[in-house]
Image 1 (cartoon, rainbow, N blue to C red):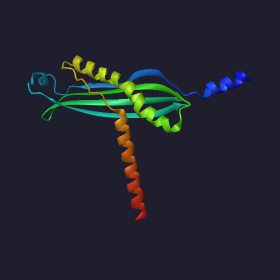
Image 2: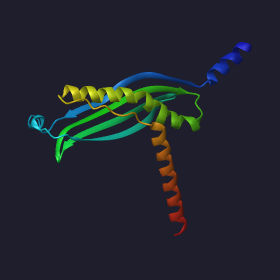
Image 3: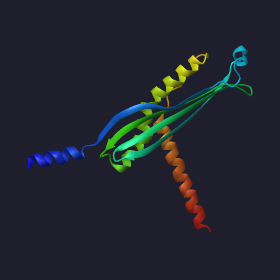
Length: 163
């Protein structure tokens, strides 16, 4: 009987683990090569970031972050790199109120160094100086997104109540 209680207690323990980290998508475009390599001006670099999570099966989630780096000189694209870094994460017995934050903050924090390395490596292999991405505060992004959702919901509720 004590053994049954121990097994029940073990089953209820929160469990988080990395099952697999992988590159989901990787692309590089240098539309103006080879002439772009003769340009001497310093390019402007723009970075876009997005992340997503989806449930695969009970307790398993596929989380991915997509980093897009665009380098331009005036209106000419020097290069465009896009990396979708993903991972399969196990998250069992995590309280529902904590699961969203885990998938939106913890998992992207684990994936980001891999994406940063892939971007830098691909840019160097393309013949350009490395692009070193600054660390990202996924918690701040998550909280900002939650705040925007709450404001949108409040505005929508206000809009429907005045009609």
